[in-house]
Length: 336
Image: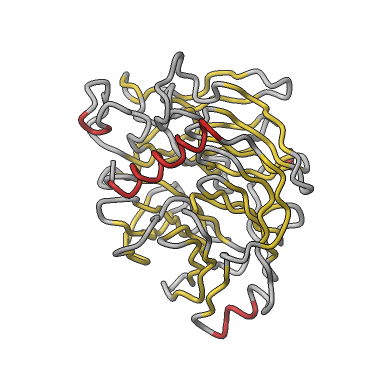
């Protein structure tokens, strides 16, 4: 685990011990939007404010707009919660990471979520090292946990493509006894997997810490963030059969708090990705148009509501702003 991430999680763990979720709907003076290119004015209107919707969590991640609320994971708090547009928070699942008696402050909670075609919601469990289905009754049902007879590392983020294939990243963050050096690690790589027609296939095996994942609007390009030690976001061409080709570096981060954790794509093709200091908005050619700066580490984001609301999961808080460009909503959002 990088020293940057370790420090963030330590601070989150301390907050988890002393903080309770609070309503906090108000503009955040310490947050700002930095415009690096005039084109950003067509994406985020000048004068747009950033508000803190709720705060007091451990380390928030995996946001998904679902049934009129933002579902999200509190990774170090080991809970899955939902926050309404008015800031009201409800705990939906305790021990969401699925690991009995988890160590305090470890990255063992749930993480990424995606609506499935059958009306359930897929949720990654970092502690249990698997993907489960969250039924409409709130019950959890095992979905994916092994590849070639070996346990997955710690599924992190996931997304469906237009054919109905599921793609997910599998870094070792949930292996809290040394990650890659953890004796419980069974796979010889940290990868990106594709699940289609009942078959699980590793499609990327040369990334150290694969994390955020998303597709271009035409689903012909896959974007994957690598959290470290090289903090880069790669782009890949996607063939009709799901085969990847032409790997290339879209953007590289060199310093600062945070890194390429979560990412989402808007309908114009811009990639909204976490990075040092907040959220970068980047063109498909790798040009940075601007940055959403936050007073704490940004972990992930989700387009919500009508597709123009943007929710950001920070270390301890949930933030929100409006976008002029509609975001790509999950393929099976709210059963559609």
